[in-house]
Image 1 (cartoon, rainbow, N blue to C red):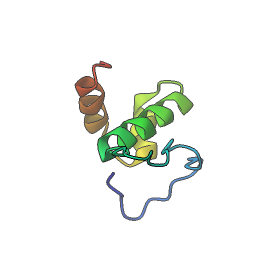
Image 2 (image 1 turned 60 degrees about the vertical axis):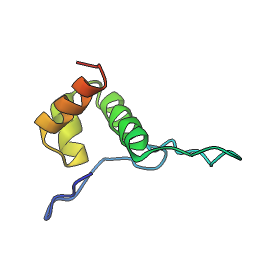
Image 3 (image 1 turned 135 degrees about the vertical axis):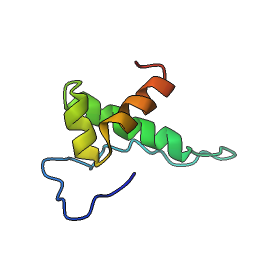
Image 4 (image 1 turned 90 degrees about the vertical axis):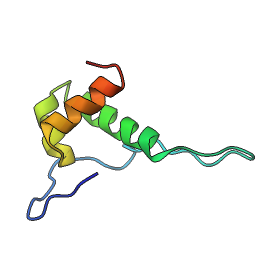
Length: 75
């Protein structure tokens, strides 16, 4: 995810935001897109569905958030 220079994230709880699991024997683990999706959805949930605040908290453009949600069938 992009990081904006000069901005400080406040009130964003990242601990536990990424529900990454250990690789299972013979498993492939998780893709970056799966992890990104989980982080975005967790942030959206913590912001009670507020997409503008979610995009701001993640440091991404609101249009980018909408495009990702649309790609995942959530818009």
